[in-house]
Structures are given as structure tokens and as C-alpha cells.
Image (cartoon, rainbow, N blue to C red; front, side, top):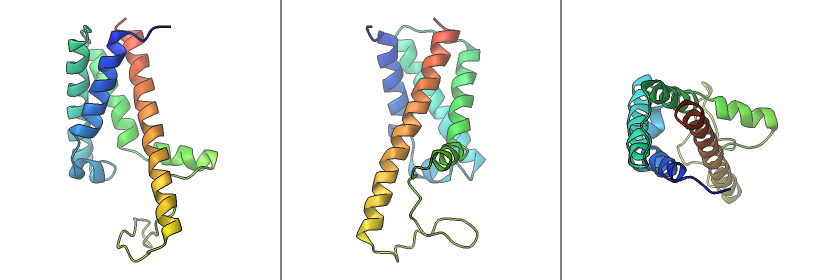
Length: 147
């Protein structure tokens, strides 16, 4: 099976939109601040649409809305965290201490190398899983609404 050119453009659009065009404010606040999530998902969707256009695909408004909604569902919620808890694996924040209200304690008072390694591994697992889900959903959206 040969990877279609449009999928390569989809990959580039995803990586540019999700990494190169997402600043710290969006990244750190998109789960707790609807405006941060809206801004990130809008920039992300526009970026993906532009890259797919250069790849030869003209997406319908319906396809664009589906890309936006699918991205917003994962980035604006803790769905992936719930999934990790369900299957019993660690997320990026599994070993970070929390305040009594449940928010993360990022004060840096916990200088434990084992904890640092565990957090780093969890971050890698989280990023990979997040990207797999985004790309798979967009693949399905393009395949069934455009092609």
C-alpha cells in the first residue's frame, strides 16, 4: 500500500498546527480556558486545511468543522487521561504532586530523579497517544468526507 500524497500534507499540517503554531499560553490553558482552546483549535484547523489544499484536497465546510470539533474534544478535555487511567498506564502527570483542589503542584520542591524520569516517560507516551488519535481521526474525516 502506498501512502497518498494528501496524507503527507495532512501530517505536515498537523505537526505545524499542533506544535509550531501553538504557544505556551494555548498549551498550558486549553483544558481550563475555553478561549485558549478555541484559539488553538482554530489555528490548528486553518493550518491543516491550508496544507491539505496544497496537497490537492479542497475540504468542505463540513470536513473543516469535523476537524475542529475532533481536535477540540481531545485538547479541551481530559479524555485521554481518563483512557490512560482505564487501561492502567501512566500519563504525563501521574507522578506530579497535586494540591488539595486537584491542580498540579509544579513548585519544583520534589527533586527526585526517579520521579523526573517517570514524568518524562509519561510525557512521551501522552504526546504519542495524542498525536495518534488526532491523525487517525483526521485520516477518517478526510477519507470519508472528501475522497
